[in-house]
Length: 348
Image (cartoon, rainbow, N blue to C red; front, side, top):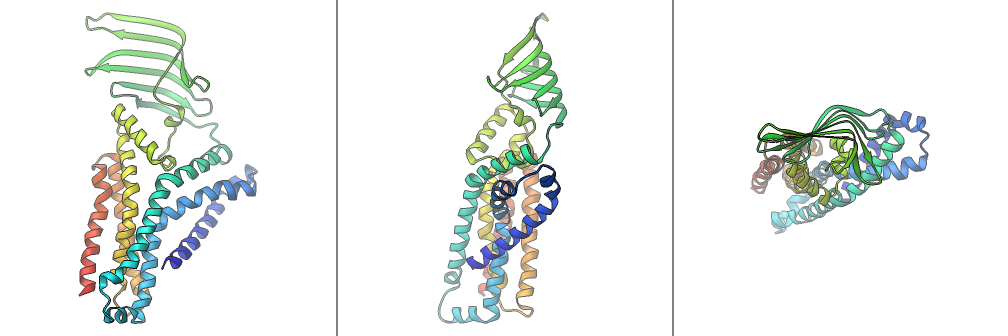
C-alpha cells in the first residue's frame, strides 16, 4: 500500500509541476532565471508543500485502490475466514496511516516553513517585480491600546506617507502622533518619523504639543507584516505561529483567529489521514458489482466532501465567525463518526 501511495503522489506531483512551469515559463524567461535556480531553489522547495497538501487525498485513493483489488479477488474473505479479526486486518492500514500522519505533522511544522521561506524569497526577489507594490488607507492595531494608520505605504523602500499613531486609555484618545512620512531604518531596526508632531490630551482639556524634524522610535511592527499575505503563513514554524498569536492577542487584532486556525489545522490535518484511511477501508473492503471503479467513485465523492468541509469550516474559523478550535476539528469529528459507522456496517 505504501508503495502505491508513493507512486501516486509522485505522479501527481509531476503533473502539478508541469502545469506550474507552463504558467510561469514567461516569467522564468523574462527574468533570465537559470535552470539550476528553477529546479534546486524553486521546485525543490515547492514540492514538499505539494506532497503534504495532497497527502490526505492520495492516502485515501491508495487505500481504496489497494483494498478494492483485494476485495475483488476475494482475498479479504479468505483472510477473515482464516480466523483473522477485522481489527487485526485493519492494523497495517492504521500503522501506515499513523506513520504518514506523523510525517505530515513534521512537514507542516518544521520542514515546509524552511523550504517556503527559501521559495518565497526566490519568488519575491527573482520572479515577482514588487517595485511598484503599495497599499493605501492602512489601519493596523499595534497593541490593545495603540493603532497606526498610513495613507500610503510602499514596499520598495518601506516608505509610509501621512502617518498617524493613536494611543487610547479607557476608550478615550490619550495621544496622537502625526508625521508626513515614515521610513524603516534597517541598521537600527527602528522607524524614523519625519516632521514629527505629537499631541497629548489631558482630562482638563489641555493639550501638550511637541514638534520635531524627525524622530527615531520603536514601533512593534515591521515592513514585512504590512505586506504579509495569507499564503505566507506556510513559511512560519510552529514556534513562529505561537509568537504571532501572542503578538496579535496583545494587539487585540482579529488576525489572531487566522493564526489560531492555522495552528490547529496543522494538528487536525494529519488526523484526517487516519480518518480517511478508515473510511477508505470501509467503503472498499466489500466486494460489489462495478469493482474498483465503483469503489473509487464512492471514495472520491466522500473525500471531496471531507476536503470541502475542511476548507469551508476553516474559512469561518480564520474570520472568527466560529471558534478556530471548533471550526478546525468539526469536520474530523463528523467524518470520524461516519468512519466508525461505516466500520460497524462493514464488519457485519
